[in-house]
Length: 192
Image (cartoon, rainbow, N blue to C red; front, side, top):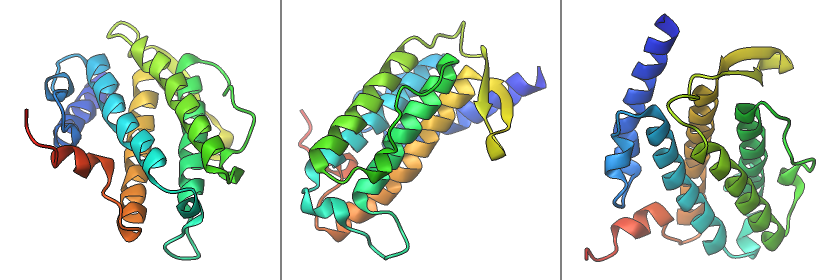
């Protein structure tokens, strides 16, 4: 019971930042009393931003690193794709369908395809998550690959949080290369 209460409080606390990032008509879904609906809405927003960023950046800029110590733009996208496959498979109680380390892929077209495939894979998991199965037990590979018990919804919320964290990296990379990030571009469109 305490675990569910903590999860509910955590999920509700995510709705305010989600609302701030929901720059379209999805704000009502981000504030839904349904945790599954909140998870779907948050995924839809970050998924759009990451996919559009991947398309916007030039092929040459996929090798760009702000400093030598960090991942290139392409490596960040590969990392996101790897994590999408990993977390969404874990939420389904399955192994990742991807057997390639996508951080090592360097060609833009191949990376965009892998990223979009990972997002589409996650779409099906988020879309089939309901309030009934949100608290379904899930086992994930925790620290040191130690099996850790959690729930399906927590895995999906972690995936969305992870994607938001790396979208922050993407925004910096795009701005350093003179591009307007998708989330900003959307807010700058004329109101209809």
